[in-house]
Length: 50
Image (cartoon, rainbow, N blue to C red; front, top):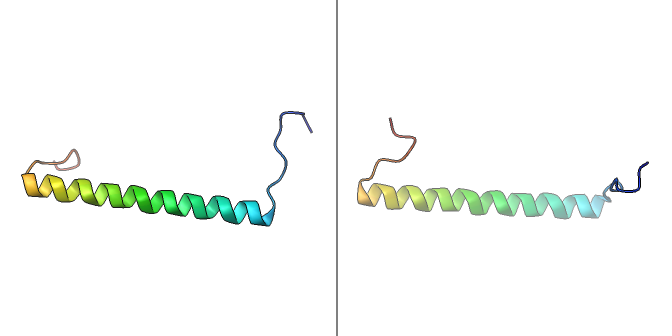
């Protein structure tokens, strides 16, 4: 193993990392929903509306 290669994650570290990813995903989805609501209120077509 090379000196700059990280070691394996423990089960606790993996669970913590997955929780952080889930929280980040939830935050991102909330941001996208809020953006969509604002766009609909302003009647501005979004980039995905074609």
